Image 1 (cartoon, rainbow, N blue to C red):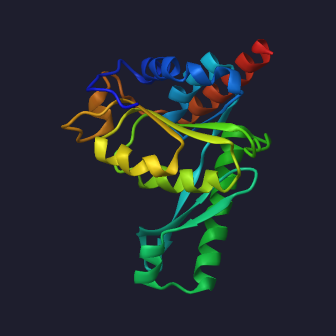
Image 2 (image 1 turned 135 degrees about the vertical axis):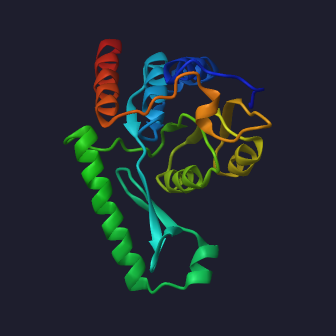
Length: 224
């Protein structure tokens, strides 16, 4: 489903409204994967409502040789990290396999650092056979989410659901082939930027991310 134009009070409000649309998945024992940092407080509200574990979805872009901002692929974290290459970019840049391997190792090391910062020694949740809900606070172009969904698919989940509060319609339509279900609460015709569709869009800090993840553990323990 994809909704009409809407403005959210803050990420908590967006997450609570998303949770309503995700309620049909509660009995499926889903895993909520949130993209840091802004997607984590949104994901927390959905995880609480679904009594589901909250996990981070870390995606690191692989830059082209000499042009780090031009993505030739991405590494997606998880129990089994996945490399997703942009075949069009690869054909244009034609990097060596040695370069791709080295860049992948570098980004995997960065992902390991980020997991340690946010999750300490908690192990990634295996996704094989699980219903996976991917959540962010909004989508602008969808390139990062597309790589994430491709990587998650290789981990063998039974179903992938993409759930976001706001995104342009064209970005959502382009992502439908990567997910089994897409939920978008608002698809404004004059999108411009994610933050414009929130009354309060303050930056989510690293401390906020850690607090959300700790809160999710407490909620899940209480639910069980």
